[in-house]
Image (cartoon, rainbow, N blue to C red):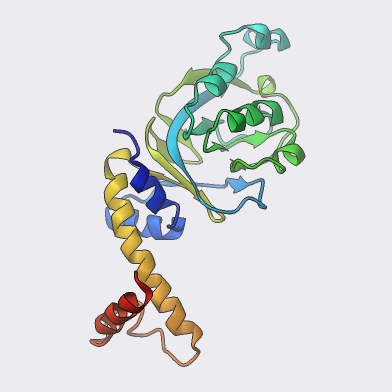
Length: 240
């Protein structure tokens, strides 16, 4: 199933911690991509898009000379050209940032093609240039060596692991300042609806706490009898 525009819009207004709580309620504990960070921190807003994947494996020297990039069928280049507009290219780089998953030229190509973002559990080269792009870009840390040094791009749009999270093609990737969450495609709509409600309540609670005289006990989680009525009145006032 494809990501509905209304679901995409809802997810753009939801924080990754809220999504992780909703996933935890469903018994899903490993959907957060560990140890990846947004390079271009000046970019605001939330990244949302369906996963298009690229898998790397350990490079074997005789298969990965620098001349391999001349081949028009090289999976890394092909993945960049095939990742659909609105999708997020997610790369399984074996959690190894010692060699780069990609550099600024390939990632710039993703941006101009209209992709929603890029995530690697390895590293990117040219990180200073990538930091100036407008498309959200997540990696583990900067890395100058070409990917051929240690990694061979081998499979396009197959199930992968990225930062210990299982990622299936078409899963929904949501990324913000805290990191990236993988939403199984078949529950993306219901997660967006549930977390929209959770976000409204969290905003209500935050407003109450910032007033300075409200105890968190009984408010969050809501166990005091009067809180639901207070929240309902707040929603009516705020149009939420």
